[in-house]
Image 1: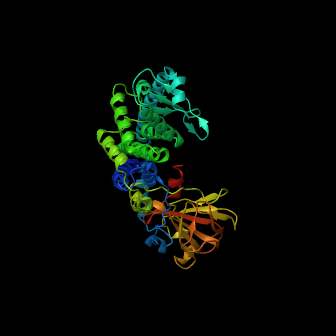
Image 2: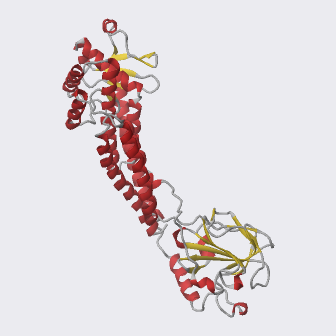
Image 3: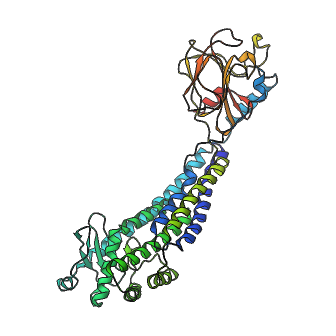
Length: 460
């Protein structure tokens, strides 16, 4: 790995953080038109990963290098190429630096995941102290809450905290100690709020968000997305609970305020969907109360259209910027499996007027299929565009400025402008042009300069 590649990886991560921060601002703007939409923040999270989508380099354009109009490389270039190859042998391999940085990031992620597991362990220990809801209260709250036809158990803790829902396979509702002293309408409000959370599996969604935040702790925008998601989730839960069960808005707001007053005495691990969440600030609660009393009319289509437009814009920006930050090395592979090398790069002979050989000659049976060295776009596929000595020739443009040339072909299987994958047949080995026998003359160029093909493949 080179230093440029290492910087490309770091540049991609930086781009992700910048894009994520920008998307948080855009998401907050759109949430004004639909404050009770948790799906908006799932979309924002998904859009933040657009820079990592493997986009095809459809803008891969190339020109025919000047050196290819002459069959042999001009004298004097061999010494320069040899010096470059000798220098690269002693280049610092930045792969170990990359491995070290990746290990540090992974260790920190593991540390945060361990803390999250401790939160869940604390939650299980807290729930172990809970007692089932008293039969007398059960009778007064009939019908008990149900989700998809299944009756949900209700437990009461011996301390005051927020009411919450928990459990994956067997979900339960856990109420604080003060729940038993509340008037029946407020008890019913708390229960129905948690039933709505369970119906949407909000407690599982919160766990997913927390795992994502632990894995990508180095991106501060993820934490902001999580907080915004919880805010939207609570707003949706409030709106649907009020509308579906016909609860008076003033009574609902009064229940929320009372829950906030009692829940400050004991903090519940922030790994559950509760009536009063630690993830919300005072400003969030103020906005939530305003939304309860005077709900904003949701503009679904406006938000959806804008999310789609932002997605297309993000793809376009990533398409334009990503190649500058993370140029991809072609996925090199040999054009055939059975061959012999008859002339190496830089070889000097009388046949070539004592000029250095510009490529690599591979001998095999005439008619042997030849595969593309890497994915790319065909620039030349004829016997007239380049020097006549090349005979039937295919020239392919690859990523990162690389090109590959296949000369003396017996037949050509591709057309100029066509895209080929690595290993896809571009023609067959032959003896067209100026040759002494059937073989493939193979050249690899980088930014218009010939390279020794063996220096490319030896890296694998």
